[in-house]
Length: 629
Image (cartoon, rainbow, N blue to C red; front, side, top):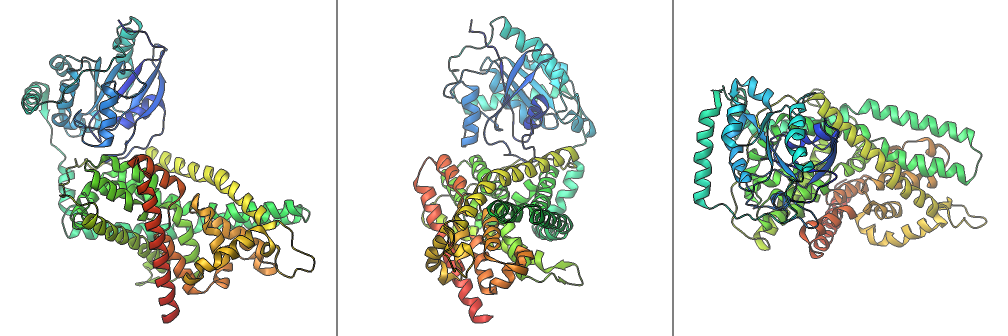
């Protein structure tokens, strides 16, 4: 007998891309990231739900794995939780194995492996709606009898699609826990399956399927037809490049109207406050510090949402896994594993989850190389900087008969520069420091599915919430600090320059200016780069505050892009764009690199390397621009 727990713990286990996270969300009401490709869950997530009988249950969503023979860090998390090896934790009270009903042959081998542990086990036969569309008939009762575990059909993405699973949990797991029959807190004894064991598993899976599959189904014929085009070495790559190009065009075209509306709203608010508030520090703090700083960042929210809309639709549709296969040969040419595509893709949103997603790469050298170049993928925090400079210096013209916008073309070139730079860095690292044989890419390709509107909407809502939360906390706090440093001490009597030139911020900017003058940066840019270490989009807010405190008269009524267009030369603007292609990483990125690699040396190397690359690229760009323009 074991001790009874107040909150029974269930572990969700399954192969990658089986719908575990969707089931986790359905049980707990959480909004964890759900996508139609393997490797989304790279660490354990916990949530609570109340069973129909009224019992609070803790559920743990674990990374996908094909076996308890862990070959990568994310699979080790699953193995250690299931076997009770996770420090400070007992064995889970039960395992809910989530199986893709359309791919039972791949899923059932792990079920047989888990059965040997002796844990209470429920098989959730997920994606039954997809199986029905394929004409696939599964005798769940016979499957339960053959496996010796409860089998419950589920549709995690439909309302009420997990009710039968909840009832089964009440009947089997919670009753066992109430009677003191839950597993003990000891570590589970397990040995890695031998080749003989694996052959036995394979034969047993085939035997069970021959008895339990009533109709074999038509298979994913539509998926195979589409893949003939999208996975073709030539047409597939052309389509992928076209999709990416259109995405960056849409970032400007679709976001233009809402950005203009936000700009007008902020302008109206500033004008109203200018009239309503008396002259003084409070008025300057609100208008020049908070609105000019935070507002300069918030205005780019529509573009970030458009970018994430494309990424999430491509993920949910199943196309991203195909993109990994298409780019496998290119990435292999620089020594990277094809599986590195998914971490690098995640880094376009933020380098932090991208670096964490590298846990799915088994080989340590390949994993380190992927982590080191992940920050070179243009994350969403750089988007405000790019957009600001493009708006200030790139004419809003169209090319090729009005089909291609010049700003979008420049944005595409910046993203492409980051990708190519990352591949070159990887080639150098794999050639000299991180040598090793290249492993083939093995990844299950999911069936194409129409993205679910609710899933996409929730993803965009969470992204907007995260962006605005950071704008209202980190960026807000930094803007207040910058405003304070830009106003104190007060200018001396008879001063003819704006107050910021006599302030702490001005002194710091002028002290840093000689370091960045060779690459064309002025003291305002130098000052903006410092708090940009906390979050790179902060640099836009700092520039907004600095120039709001620096300008007077009509210049104050102009947008930040207009002010920069008048204050900077084109070589300076191009130099800053080159700097941000390699932008030295924010503190959170360096922190997660230290955690993932358990080393201080790698984040230190990353910072030094990217700073040197950024300075060198900016120097060359500035000098060439001065010579040619």
